[in-house]
Length: 257
Image 1: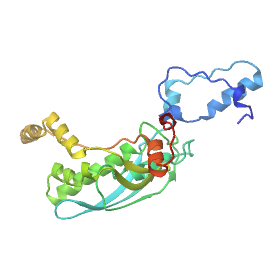
Image 2: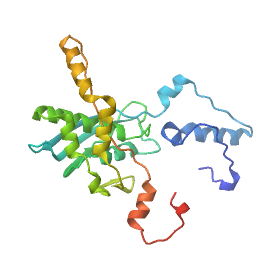
Image 3: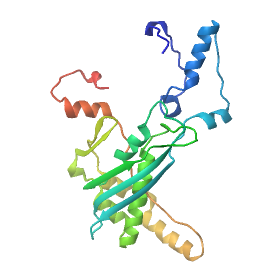
Image 4: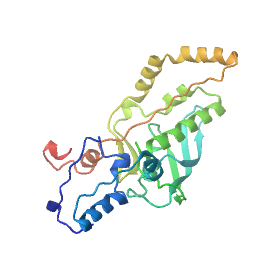
């Protein structure tokens, strides 16, 4: 942006963790501090207090979804349709539409869904701009998906865990191609035994005994309940692309990571 050569710039990074979320973007002050230092010919430091950070840093999560699903009589998911409205804020941040681009393909999660459609209406508002923040799209999509499954099976009168087991992608189906695109890369599950992971989690929690305890507490007048959600974290997108689209190109392994 300043027209300098890359060798004329020295970047010294502190121990701040990864480059995700708020730290993963370019903010106006990042440019303005450099511009001020260049014009004044002296070091310039910019300090943001907590209040300023909360009102100016990007936010995420605020989306309104209208989703519906079709099930067969055995509780197998036939189709899911979702229309949602993200609160983008006053302008588009550095990462553009990345939050919604991740929400749409990640919403089906680990379930086997025959037909899927997602429509997003990208709406600017008068709030702080929305952008990437701690796994953009995964939590939004997972919340909608799991709530939709629970609401549907309750209406069908089926067991929530039984329906989840029937719809999870099985180990025998691996590798499993979702046929959806996330950030330019096809979603491709290379391995995993999701039904077994669910069973191990339920055993660890003591799910059946927990349900009996909650039933007794509700009978006594307490407002208590339980819920469960299953989601997959994306990773290795670049490696998946190489394996899927260029399997014959022999490169040293270090080139992949």
